Image (cartoon, rainbow, N blue to C red):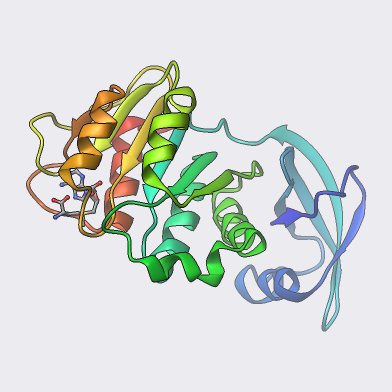
Length: 234
Ligand code: SAM
């Protein structure tokens, strides 16, 4: 459960709407029960349920610990179809990625850029769901880049500076490394894959092609597997 940004002190709070439902129906909590709570981009703590009514819950909150350490990872993701985007953003947020670039690529369908899920407040909702799942509080940044070439030529070198650069690509000789030291920038292709020109542009910037074995995975499968291999247990 996460509180709004303006919640700043250990104190009593009232939760309504989705959070009220979650506490009553998922946790089935009652007065005296304790729940994990968090301050967005800050500490995590405990909330004691004081009172539950039909449409609100009162909690006494005490913040204690820091949120889990973010993964030292920037994800460069060719924009997937809207339904998949929704799940992927939640999953990579749950797994601890804090910087995501949604980029264009030749095989990204133009219509995907019209998705309402790309609105900042919609992306924020998806991230909140992902953070709540992980009992994490740190909101990722998500940026959109609608043109591949200028992004790669003008920005990517700086974004990926001092990090290990990897592009997930099924037809390559190197398996994805396991438990890497230091930060990484990871590029993942669209449903049809990156075209050779795009792979070459990434390789020119020092991106190593890595594979996950002989099976072709959906992007939403490939990403959690990649993160689990690169940063196991983190
Ligand atoms: N036929 C496409 C190709 O050869 O690139 C398949 C694309 S796959 C559905 C979508 C993206 O998921 C790929 O661009 C890659 O980034 C990632 N991916 C899927 N399976 C993978 C694998 N076995 N190894 C590495 N990356 C993979």
